[in-house]
Image: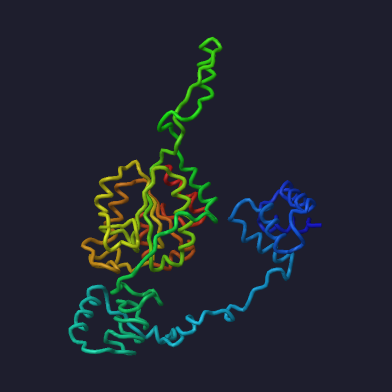
Length: 391
């Protein structure tokens, strides 16, 4: 009865076998579910999809074979009221944005801002010069400029700001997420290097047999330390800003990494590695950790994994003072080079789809600092990265 569905899954790229198909039929025959399409969907998916990466393919084939089961609602019918209120802000046409010129570089931008702050006496809106709102000035909020300083705006709109003049609060990534982490864990297990460690707490079968034989048949129970993953991992996570678009995927990666490695430490940064990092985003302004101290503390036997979209102003990488939220004495690129020197086996995992990397200059710059070691945040990308860390 469901043979067409079975062959449709195989044609759709889902690696389902005859055994899994027969398991579905047996479950149906035994009455595992009632006659509801939703229940059948979950049963079929549980029986025939053994890898999370194929769930989307399964859904497409299921929708094709059981037409009408899944109906897509009009997305505009359920828009939150808060979203609609945003329409009151100034939005620019592409033609208007093309007419707006950049300030002319980092030094020129900072020099101009200092002058504006000295000269401006009151609130301004809709203009192209002063610190204000809804205009084309490089300084202010809710407007547009290809290169500016964001002041007084709680979230990004065009993601063009090279510096943010506000204190922003970020959230830690969730290391308890389980959904979707299984395949990430499987991929990371390829990095394992098992070694006996700890107290003698595990039964040694082969040792007991040998000792008993040598003891004339009298049982001589032997124990030995359990085998643990001896690989040491440092995880550096970009948090906040444009990384908000990738929170779910990074949560899953963080959860998988934390559960797989006994010797594991994590740290947060924003956009690029600078002179300090933090462990708790809720206290990142009060409790920071010196990056130089981390470089001294964790030896070359550690593998370093950087996770971030590498999408930032190039100033943040190459200029002192270019950091988007604070004044950095040394450019971010220098700190990344130091990290690469300290941990030769290191990779950068990028949640941005690989086909879009060429459109962001800063991604290319980070790629140059991680030659052959930047991979996408996909299962295939993680596996490629693990092979790099094993080299």
